[in-house]
Amino acid sequence: MADSTHAEELSLKEKIKQDIDHHLEDVHDFHLFSDEAAGKHYGFPLPVIIWDDGLHVFMSSKFHHGESVAESNGNYYALYHNKIYRTDAAGAMAFDGDHHPTNVKPLDLSITKNVFSIMMASLILFLMFRSLGNSYKTNRVPKGIGKFLEPLVIFVRDEIAIPNIGKKHYEKYMSYLLTVFFFIWLINLLGLTPLGINVTGNIAVTFALSLMTFLITQLTSKKYYWKHIFWMPGVPAPMKVILAPIELLGVLIKPFALMIRLYANIKAGHIVIMSLIGLLFVFNNWFARGAFFGLTLFLSVLELLVAALQAYIFTMLTALYFGSAVEEDHH
Amino acid sequence: MEIPNIVGAGLIVIGAGMGIGRIGGSAMEAIARQPEAAGKIQTAMLIAAALIEGIGFAALFAA
Image 1 (cartoon, rainbow over the protein chains, first blue to last red):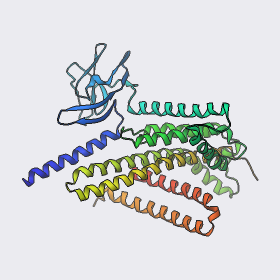
Image 2: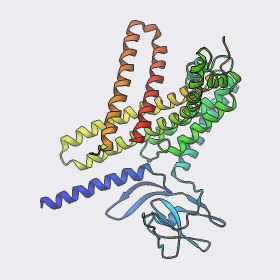
Image 3: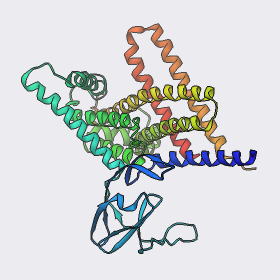
Image 4: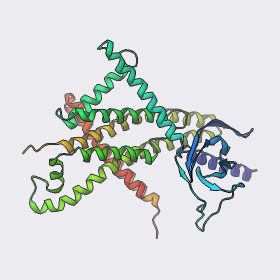
């Protein structure tokens, strides 16, 4: 008896771990919840777009949550660990010695869960800011959602852009700073909804964001920025030689840290909340369940703060890097 | 004897925690001394904390 309950508990823990891993991955369908007893999954499919000697477009419902092989224009595709591979009609997979699949992996341009979430966030931002922009045409005082957004725009301008970039140059960076701030904030908040979105906890997304910051910094940099890197003013000559490679490395490390910080913060937050929700099911007495419910609630509220804080820090450091790029010689 | 990675992760968390704790404590003190500079102190505190956090996460990934 004791043995069987122990085995059951292990499988439950394994299942919770699987659910967390599944949540953190970028998948081809929106999975909301499952009815285990009936074996049914609820959610909605997303379009799969693959380039494999021609374009193949079909809905991910053809995979039946990875349980069956999808056929498209004479080719067969199967899901293995949420990646699409070309297979035969039976869905056979071949593996090499290290247990990596050797099947052909087509170029996957699908609208995955993350891509869909990014599109959704962009649409929401577009609608919100268009209504803010339009309300200025009739009245200088914004109406509706604009009343909420205007102070935030002013906050980004007065607290982030002007102190870090300077009054002279800040205007040309405002559009990027505002986009990054509101995009990261909204996508972080969407990640806290039960939809199971984990976009900024995906390193590819944060890589793209920090790459934009990196490119804008380099492309708009002035002479003094490079002088600061290669021939640091105000230090003795031998020190200048030592500092040059360090500063040059710093150019790459800055956006790298930006990428890792956002990614790790959001991913860690999601793992912690998911684990605590999982613990609710591990314990069998109501006292522990109540305690973990309270802890989950507390951490969820904390994540609300982290969502805004990470957006603020990303924008703030981006503005700091832009500021160093346009800094002028003041000696 | 091989030291498991988790020990390294623990050391990193201790280090980063001490760093951020010191920043937070000093910022508290500074704000208490000069409440009118609270905004500026907060900004500087967040930047410094974010930089430490960045290093901490980078090390955690390495561990």
